[in-house]
Image (cartoon, rainbow, N blue to C red):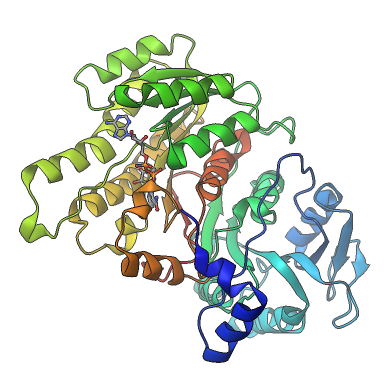
Length: 450
Ligand SMILES: NC(=O)c1ccc[n+]([C@@H]2O[C@H](COP(=O)([O-])OP(=O)(O)OC[C@H]3O[C@@H](n4cnc5c(N)ncnc54)[C@H](O)[C@@H]3O)[C@@H](O)[C@H]2O)c1
């Protein structure tokens, strides 16, 4: 469903009217286009500590315009506020800010450049996870980065985004993959997120096809977000296996044929679903995306047992049972990637969605609990929590609620299925084993559960 308000707000009359009466003014976000090669289309600015110098080592692969600002150990052209080019991407290493006094470096670095950000600019701040710091003051300073990052993300205009990445010792070699995602339009609808990267033994071999040689299963792939995930994984080189309910067989087969993949018509809640799935995957699978999901909304006072059971069965029980079966049978290979489609409802709660929010929160809990165990086999498991995404599911929401869902975020609009798909594709990459047991929100920094 298209968002007509964005078209209006970006028309010449609408732009003036919206500004004059103080209505939200969402911009059209820049998104990744097929055939593009460079993650950053414009100037990338580096600043801060030694991790920024590491980024400088591969920055020429991200863009051909790399600049440095402030004193630092990188080799790049100096950027001068008011004179340098508009910035498309910024990386600031704050990992060496270990005392309250040093936090002012955040203000000193960012304030002069905020008016020089180009449209849809992407900022990444690097730090060290507070629980890795022995000194409580250092831990406190690193935790302060979180409040700073989430707040500055809310102040960015013109489609700008900002994330905080905590980089563990030994995880530096996974910075390139993370920055290729978070500094590019692939992360257009992600902002205000905090993620931790740990060491990971596997690496992407070819950035033009980061999923080459990998087999990926996507449930609920006949339409909406699942179809977009399948397309994006195929674009990135994966061999895709699409699953959906038998009534969706025609759409599923058509999409699978277009993507050069296979299809499985199967209800994931069927009593023999695990056995059937394993039989369909004799050569194993590397990436499993549990995307199939349903809503049956009612306030708890009006919730029928059927509505409750159906949502918990599809959204939570099936991903648990199927993942365990794929693991126990050895079908999910070592260094595999499991991605669970949660929701910000599972983080913030949502009126009329006790069943849905319970199921989605349960998925986040599943990822957290399973990650350390699966890590022994190099397998990562994460949740992706979309906010308001323009699909058939959200097209059914009453108008006023739909408008509220779209506008109540830092980016002032709903996301597209492609935005969720790009996050899933990134988490599916060999190097993204650096991230596990975490929930990545794709919600434009929605005010819900922020
Ligand atoms: N659209 C949003 O704004 C939004 C927000 C947060 C989370 N999500 C989650 O993202 C996922 C995809 O959402 P969507 O908007 O594309 O939904 P959708 O309703 O458009 O598509 C869901 C797909 O899952 C399939 N499916 C449902 N039950 C199944 C079963 N038992 N077995 C096999 N397949 C089954 C459906 O046939 C359908 O093709 C869901 O898990 C949803 O909860 C969506």
